[in-house]
Length: 432
Figure 1 (cartoon, one colour):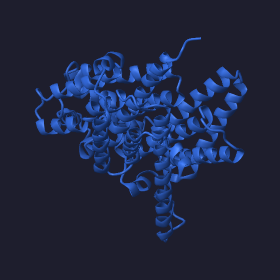
Figure 2 (figure 1 turned 180 degrees about the vertical axis):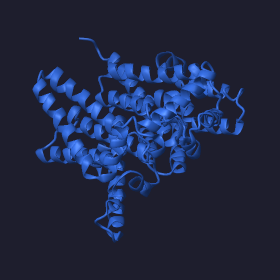
Figure 3 (figure 1 turned 120 degrees about the horizontal axis):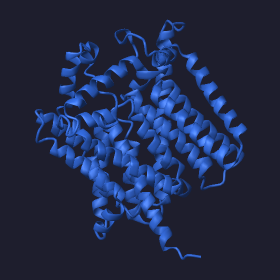
């Protein structure tokens, strides 16, 4: 039991353990229904209030500027209520983004977040995703066996995309993003920055674990998340093998093998093959586009840009964006978007359309500061996280749903808190 507690980051301090457990509860409930995750956030906030020391907050604000961008983003959303025509929708949007106010205090200013907290929270997250994925595979297999037409390609749909993710009532894009992060978390925890020695059996287990998360991304068939996984993997391989080890040949071989295996696996499942074929077919008529490929997505972006051109500085107001966007859809006879109430499927365009250039500036400030902190920290997983979020928002309005918003705000501020705590700890060490 003591070994398990150590692996999960627990020590002898009861207040530290309570705070760590509360944070782990938040990340462990992320894949499940929103109200469970909301209660976990409330518990974490209450634990923080009971254990925090409120001294030096003014100093923390000056040093930890990331908090300012999160808070200003929220404040600007509140200002947007002044000129909105849909106050109820605006208040709902503001409530959804309360984590932009709560998490800077609970996470970024939390002196308890150290290496043990970092490992413990990350491990609980990918342990949870592993258990969830095993459950999904079992349910998919049971559904597959109950289908009498086992030879039909539709039978395999239980193992991919929306049918596969529906077993835990989550959209494939968010679950895929969690799986991509878990993939890199395992590689970071066991190979890039291991804190415990691994036997050959242990290394093999970690490799199988990483491959499992990679296969889950393939099966979930979220095209952007798979591309992000490949891109970050290629960047990592180029850095560690080509740059640090000066082995370009080894780096190229790894990239070719990873890309080849990915293409091979995608071709084995008919639905996946159809989705990725549509993704690269920009000329296809969007009205015949079954899976929402590039052609239909580009139309969403063009319509969003048309809306942005009407009020580029301050946006439509908090709560008005979707209604105003649908007016543009109607004007341009974009009927499929009207029918399904599509948002821009791009967080940058969504933010710009809703809150104007001012809101977009705060969002980009969050990402830019996080990237600077990640580079300065030299933490590969932190860098990967910022890249994952920044790229994922190109094709999804991540901050408009709790599963994307909490993942974004929690982990960016959690890593930010760790970075500053570690930096201050190093500054106290005697200089040689």
